[in-house]
Structure formats: structure tokens, C-alpha cells
Amino acid sequence: MAEMGLPVISSGMVFVQGGYGGPRSVLAAFNARNGDLIWRAGSPAVCGVESIGPAILLVDSCQQAAAPPGIVKILRALDPKTRRELWTVEGGAAMAGSAAVLVIVVSAAGESKLRGLDPLTGQQLWEAKLTITNVPPLVNGQVALVQQYGCPTATNPPDVTARSCAGPGLARSFVSRIDPATGSQLWQAGFGPGSQLHRLLLGDVAAFSIDVELPPAPGQPPSEAPPPGAIGALDPATGAELWRQSVTTASSFPALAVPGTVYVEQFKPPSAQKQCPSARLDALESKSGTLRWRLDNLQACQLSVDSDGRAVVVVLTTFSGTKIVVLDAATGTELWDKPMVNSGLYELVHATVSGGVVYVAASGHYIAPSPVTGG
Image 1 (cartoon, rainbow, N blue to C red):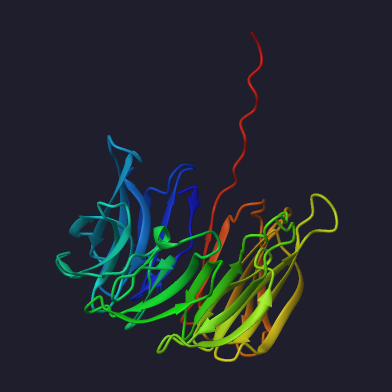
Image 2 (image 1 turned 90 degrees about the vertical axis):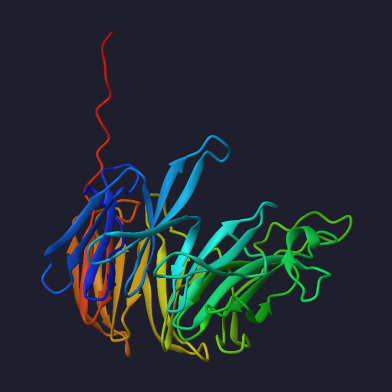
């Protein structure tokens, strides 16, 4: 593969998706201990790995359709150890949970709905009554979260839809917890009128990033300043807000949530052209938002972070090269670093850490062909 995505580690295996400069149409599985190839599958229909569970690998297959939008997503469930196909259904944006596979489908009215499927057979177990956004659900054990946007309906119990809003500035973002066994709604948390949920991550808290965009007062021009934003955390058990910090979400956002810690990235514009921004990585205590440690003045056009709770791996990409830095998760102390020759505006190096081992996928260089001259 000339280009690869982030490796995913599950049940002693490493899964990598990649391709040859076009869509990522190749899947491969390796032994996580020694790197031996277990299986490799290539198909132009593969258009994404959705989720990997202990006994299931969910893959999107994109197929041409006559009606708009011209592509139909087919969710395929594979045996992770053998790549044997277990079942297929129409739908996408799926996550593998312990009790059910959660998949988003579009109703006849054009609204996104959530269904629970039997992991072994793909048979539908339930369909949740609420309307959600077309963003993959988050699943961690028995906790399953979905996003909603709009205004509450007059039904009992109320739903949330954009068409229910009586005027501008009333739409808002919500997060709801769903029981993965039944599809029932356990709680709902709203962020107020004008709120736009940009990012939601799930560790031992639900870390969020929001903007609040309200229409200007009558006769007043729209503000040119960025809308007020915040990052914070919800208690997955109750939906209660644990903490919130005001930020400009265009340059500061939660990048990773793991048990005990929420990692927040912040970027400042470069001082000169053809330079990378100055980046900062904060490790916040997940339940309180207090700062544990900080890495400041990092030069990075792209920054990514991953952690297994013991170690943190940071990938810094610049015009001149890429560097992998591994830190102690408790203190932020650097343990080691490794330069990579890959460079550019795009992330050509992906790294993840699991069980104290750092797994790296490094993509090749992309070289534009020489211009053709002559008559």
C-alpha cells in the first residue's frame, strides 16, 4: 500500500486500511506480537472501516446507485480472524457494541435513525424513536451516545428535529445516551440555543467542543468575531456537565479522551508564511478539567495524539519531516523520540499505542508528474 491510515489494535491483531493514491480499498490484518500477515483483502467497493469489536469487523462498501446521491453504503460484517463475511445490511456510520451493532439508516422522510442489529446475524433488534444526526455513534462498553440537532417536538416523549424550530437561532445540539440492548433513551443533555456541537469523544467522560452562534439583533450586522466556544465534559452515567472551559474552537479542541485524561490541542497562527503553526498539547484531568501537564511551543502543521493510559504517542508533522514523540502519560515526561523522513502538509505518518507498544503506519511520498511539453 502506498498510503495507509491509522492502525487499529484489537484482540491481538493490527488492522490497517490503505490504497495506492486513490480510495483506501485494501484491508490487512497482522499479528500484533510479531507482525506476521494474517490476511489481506483488496476490493474497489471497500470505502471505510467503521468499527472493530472483539468478534466482528465492520466495513463500509460503497456501491453505485441510479438515484441521488449516486452511492449506496452497504455495511459488511466480517470475522476479524479470517475475513469471512458474516452478514450485510444497507446503512453506514456503524459501531460495534457488546449488546448490538449500532448503525445509522435514513428513513423515508430523509431523517437519520439508529438501529440495533444482532452482532451474529445482522437481524434488526430495535429502532430508536429519536431522530439523530448522521454522525457515527460512540460506544464504550454499555455506554452508547448519539448526537441530535434542532428543536424539541410537541410529541410525548419529545423528539428533536431541525424542522421543529420556530425561528432562527433556536436550533441547538443535544447528546443522548441510548441503551444498546433496547434502543431506549436513558438521558439527554442540551447545550442551549445556537449551540453547534463540533466534536464528541468518549472515555470515562464524554468530552465535547461547541460553538454558540446566535443571529444578530434586529438592524445589526453579523459579528465578524469568532463565535464564543467551549470545551467540557459530561458524566456518561447521568448526562450532567462536569466542567466547561471557554475557548475559540477554531484553534482549540479535544483530540483524545481516555480513562482519566482528556487531551486538548491548541494551535496559534504562524508568524511567517510557509511556516507551521505553533501547537500546544494539554493533558486535563477528565472529571475536573484541571491541567495535569502541558507541551508548549510545538512546531507542527499536523499534530495527532494517542494513549493507552500508560504512554502517550504524539506525531508532529512539518514541511521538513515528521517526528514521533513518546511520553509518560502521568507526567508528560519524554521517554523517546524518532524522526521520520515523511514530510508535507498531510499526515503521512500515523501512530497508535497499545499495551506499551507503538504501532506506526508510514505512507510513501507523493510526487507530481513532470509537465508534458511539445506539440
